[in-house]
Length: 71
Length: 132
Image (cartoon, rainbow over all chains, first blue to last red; front, side, top):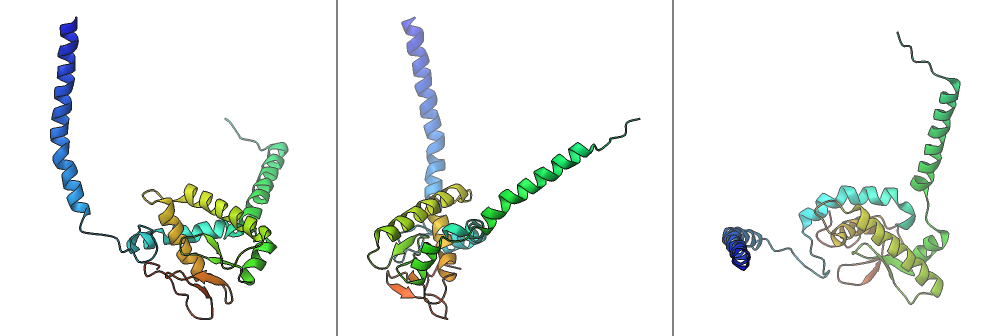
């Protein structure tokens, strides 16, 4: 019984290691893609790129219109 | 053969439901600012910040402090529940802040990207370079 358990655990560890091997290069690839495009930070400590502000602009306008009492 | 007949009762119920829907929808769309809030803005005691929240230009009275804290909590809730997929609450608040500073009226205060409180005049406000 102990032998079966140990065998199952070894199998689980093996699968885990295999998954790590497959995932590791994929994760490294993601990091490399992200690094060159650093957001511009001026005085405000908010991590946001200009393109994101532009994309959110319509939703921001709608929010102000629909909640005029708090803006 | 089946002919659907409209009973007068059904029609009346539908009419009541439609009226109720309008009555609920209108106040939220037409809701105006609290007069005390409007006054504090006009007096330059408080102003719009680039982060999408209100700030104190000068040391506030207890009443103004409470009013602003209350509004900022409501704003945070609104940013949190409405931030589009893929953006953070801070990012959505910032994008809204760009609009709120643009919407300030002449005489009202707003915070420039360098942290100074400026008074809005007839020209364009000084905003973060990322604002549209």
